[in-house]
Image (cartoon, rainbow, N blue to C red; front, side, top):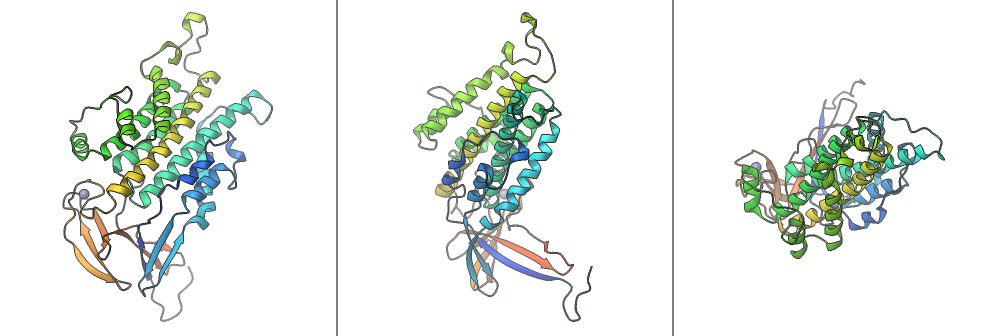
Length: 371
Ligand SMILES: [Zn+2]
């Protein structure tokens, strides 16, 4: 470590306050990159569909206020190549979990499987990036559901890597269901309360009285999106209800039994389901962020974790010529900082200099657990 010049404090702390954006948290034009091309992970690059999707996701304008009153509107789009590289590295790590070797020959049938796996991993990266964007703006309606979505998809990939195709699909169906239920509960706080207390009975997704039709009739879910969810959910039911072809031990009656092993046919079906489920997950995150912006964003007494009006009065403070109030949830202790002039939430970020490195000392004032 280089010694600091005499007279320079050992640590300098720089604080900024970021406004919550007024743009769409998940810009709809990012969806122009769907469906992603099926490409092996090793061939991805930042100018490809996933890279452009991530760049669009970080195109959202952010207002930054410094202590001297300087206010700058910027976006994180310039950092998109770094975000893409992180996603790409994560995809390589995920690919390495799959021990199957599909070979390098682009003309071989196995190359198609490698490309299909690449498409599934792009889907995971897209959901993960969208989830992070939503979390960074606190634009979620239920924190457990958004965190569980990424956890579900990691679980599905791990099970599929171990050739548990039926079990992977069961969890994948649970992922889709969880994301739909989140959208439904967001519109019904009383039911969300019962869900938290363990007394909520989950209605069916499909049918005229199912959640999908209810959301569609309420204008919370696009009809095309609802139909796609219904179709995928129906296909994946066979894996939950144990249809013979879906079993790991299928084929006994046709002398085609392999048991627990790599199966090209099952792998292909799994990857197709995963690609569709992850894209639907991204689109559901977008639908939920729209609902959040319309109905929840300006409820300044609402704790984002507990989802109840439990934020206390809090202390007022001036920063950059603007007055803010820091409010704390009486139930979970989570803090939220709010502009007193507009009632909008803001995020306090501090960065410290001094050890030779830039050391982030804090995240948004409403810190979140790592997804
Ligand atoms: Zn709380």
